[in-house]
Image (cartoon, rainbow, N blue to C red; front, side):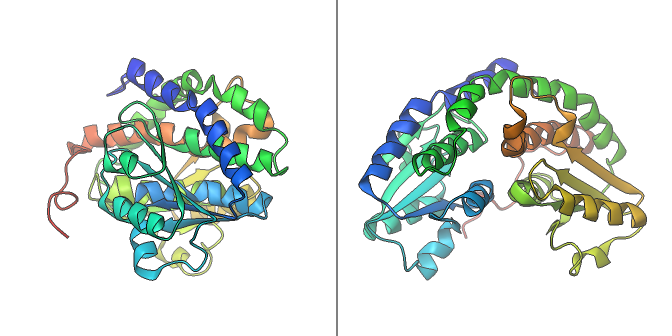
Length: 333
């Protein structure tokens, strides 16, 4: 597979899943302490990656759980931020300035702070009350977030299947390697067909809306300098559909949760207008060893693996490195 280091991928994902005992001990301690608000704080991709877990909590729990943008939290504040708040952060580098400042802000308000990162000596690790460390460059953080939220919901009596899910996640590194292998020819064909496309219309919903936002902004825009429009499938018919034309490159991310019908509806309309609609559907991947009732929860992980293959092939056909930046962490702002 193009640009895929399988041993490194397996080691990184295994290191995230191996945090289960530490995550469970932490969640138990926090629940016993009686916190009543959970803020999932991020910036850019790490903010978008919080959305599936806010979505999960919103539809299954009465706990106040909210994904918030680090910089906006500092600027606007939050009336419920205080000593009964847990603020959770993620950062690949451990140095994201907005997140570092938000950690300091949350601590100044008395909140208990937690982070997931791969760098134990980084500011995001050293400034929080508890840092749980995976291998460097481990991405995405869905492994840790799903374990954290699953254990939290279980302790609150709002998720009976957590132990079974956590046991099955032990096999997720190998499962995702198989996903990557299956996605490779699909990714190569997509990239070859879209070498000259300079505008993409992305649609997703449910627990894949965060990934839709992330792939649009952090990959296609930031890493490939391509213009995009991104829209939630439930909002598709309230304005954005007017941008569709016969040659519009449409990417649809389809998952397996209760919002699937909303994305089906958007897909049906998009195909009536555009001749270039590509659907990336998690149902296409077997996920051997994962129970059917958990497949929907794993959709962000599956799509991240699939689209990582697409990203590498876009890099190939466009001769544009995924590491190239003009402004991000290059200029002061």
